Image (cartoon, rainbow, N blue to C red; front, top):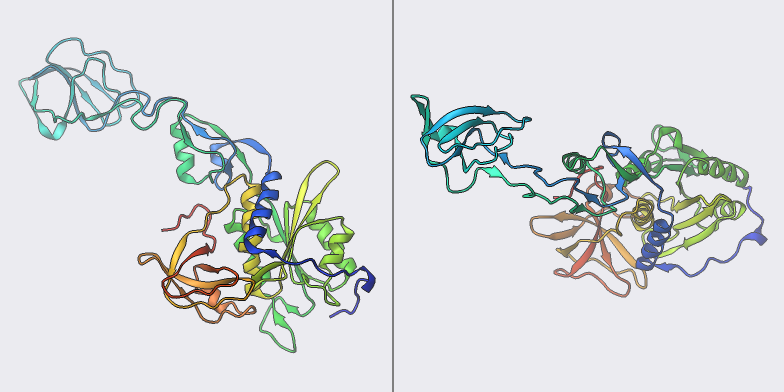
Length: 418
């Protein structure tokens, strides 16, 4: 590693770490205060975005009575004389005479004056007349059966997925006001890192450069390959130049390593050089303690963020779920993520006055969480087999049978937990 460092006199003692729950609330609030602007976009272009306004219906759903079966729209007790045919997409003439019927297709508009719809498979036709017994339950969908005009179907802050897009189209919308996905970048710090091949000669393979962008995409970010830079040389000028360049186009820049105040940890001096303000500087959580989130404001009011992730791989992911996830929820105008709960199947140790985020595998059918093995700060084997982190609060330990919050690992965009 380079021995070039910031002057010792510029280094100050770090403030006391923020509590884990306090840190999550704090970063969510600053993210929400800097929520990305709302824009109107065509439905085809909004998958993965977030509703900036409630989704309401422009008309009743259905907008008119529609047949739910193929058959006959009849008037009177029958048998019925056939006077026409109604297909989906047309407006039928009213049925005005008793004992008359029109053939009707599923989804077609039921003519005014119809008293029932007779299923085709429950009817017979002979001598130009249709006979059968309609079911007692109406075989058509009433206007407003799903929703009434102007009804709010989804609140602002709802993530847009294919189901939401389809619902918006059925409501008559061509565009929606949405918040775009945040743009993110990653800077990898550390001269000791290799970007190809196995570890050797005192150098270790960079695991976060390939992995963190994928995690960020699962949180709804846009990350291009060109937005991933590193390893950045262990010098202060290189750090300042790399971070300044990344901030030119990104809403959020994540960095890996350099979050402490060692002789070659340049992130703090870099943030000072760029005029950043700390939102959170270290969090009382294990693993992952030396994490941070800083904020920069341009003269034009544009706000950008820097998330300092520890260099140890599992600690870096703890920082992602602890700080980056709630920040991104705020930036997208979404609700603060609510943590589900599960019952511990085995004991989980506490970490003194720090929150312990313990990797667990979930049995969703049983509602239980079982700790996994290989969970050191530098290990990823346990993470690869886990579903999330059990939250063991400060001053406690987890006992079998305890109900504890779970921080789930992010799903693919649009994917819902079972």
